[in-house]
Length: 436
Image (cartoon, rainbow, N blue to C red; front, side):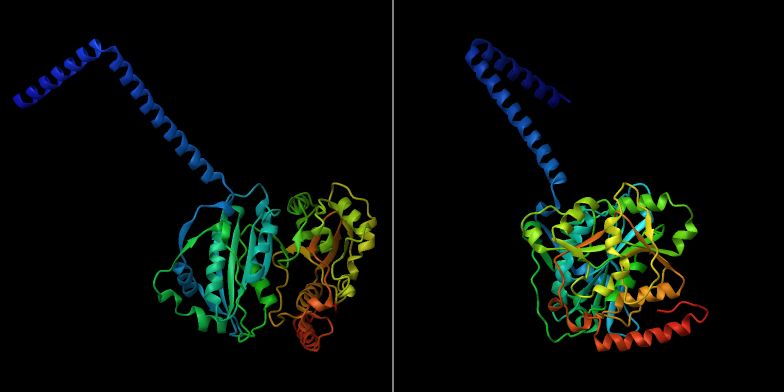
């Protein structure tokens, strides 16, 4: 008690002594005030800089995110927990390998986009996320002895671009050979952390001729469909990764489905969206991509654009009737134009109910992969209807030199498999009067 009193008495004495000193020396008092003002200013500037730096980090684009360490080992644990093999035993499937969730706008949950791709074309996903405001379900295929490197790249790339995803489910499909050679023991290894720089991330192609497992296109399409969330999704648009939706396609389709007459009509109708190819010269010359049907027709008239597969398989899209679609006046409302009577080899891209027939997984990189599903849908009682005003597009004109033999309509293996498929179809739909 007495020690405290002595200490406080000393402090008062020191304070009075310095008070008298400042009173007798006004210059010293002025210097001390300036010194205190400088300290206060320095503290305020630091606080402002801290707030600005935090704000910039929060709002900056994903590609400019700061460096950070990423441990990829949990991804391999996910593979071990969720893995299953397909019926052939040649492919390993990991449903919901990576998921990104955010709030959707009103009615956005009605309609989902299904995609499939290999690791080399994963970057094309961004062309879809920029214009599609609903859920996306993506099947990613990986093969080869360096599959673990590809999985690491995919995990980092998705992490860097995560803010561009609204609702995205990524499903991993890999060849059984790739799993055995490169993946099976990864979850037991030590923690591997990558110093990630999102600005410098680049895919390195690992050529591997020893893994000849074929790209399983229909299996990928089925996995994407079964992995679609949320459960409220009623309609699905299935595209290849290099086929892009037109601007506002999503909102046009949502408006179309929410203003339709009866749900029963929707449940048995597949709405065809005409698809086009845009010449790469137009893209290289910085010609703007068409924002609507009128701009698309201008490109068409200038021969910078053509119907999809025009040079590869004109009969594969002939029932879409592009000339009739072109001549139909453009307006703000999406309406059905005509209802073609299905005949193979028509293979249009369409949006339809999620319970439409699935894809026959026996077809892989075959020309009849999508044809077989369209054929079965018709036999099962679904009708095809072409819509006006909306469209899809691909960058670059296709030609036969770009396609492997397995993707040509006259490929013998594809034809034999399709003949077997039609026999199986007749046995399954014994009461159907429809044939294809």
